[in-house]
Image (tube, rainbow, N blue to C red; front, top):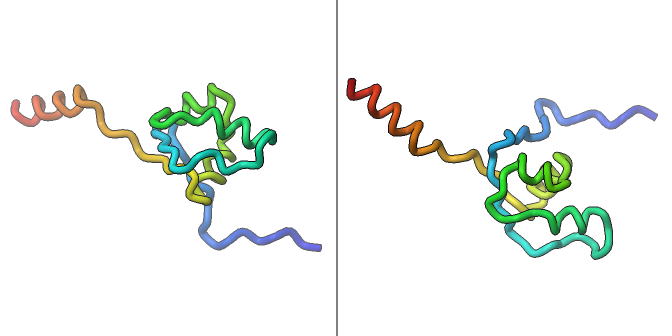
Amino acid sequence: MSPTKPLDGWRPPEFGDDFVIRVLVANPKKPGTAAWHRFNLYRDKMTIRQALDAGLWRADFRFDVARGFIVIAVPRPRRAAKAAKATEAAA
């Protein structure tokens, strides 16, 4: 039996440590399972790094995003960095 061939050009999403998690649903996992316990570790607006430190797995992010349980957003640029660019542009 041959292994399943991955979809052409498909790769799992890569999430940077500073990306922000938004939880969209109450815990949809089967109560008492390891996945249920890990889902309870999510906090709205936590970063990927905070979630990993809390005990979540990168595979959890991919699974939960694919099923619409969470969304992960690129962080907004910091105001200080924005102000520094504006100062450089004005100079």
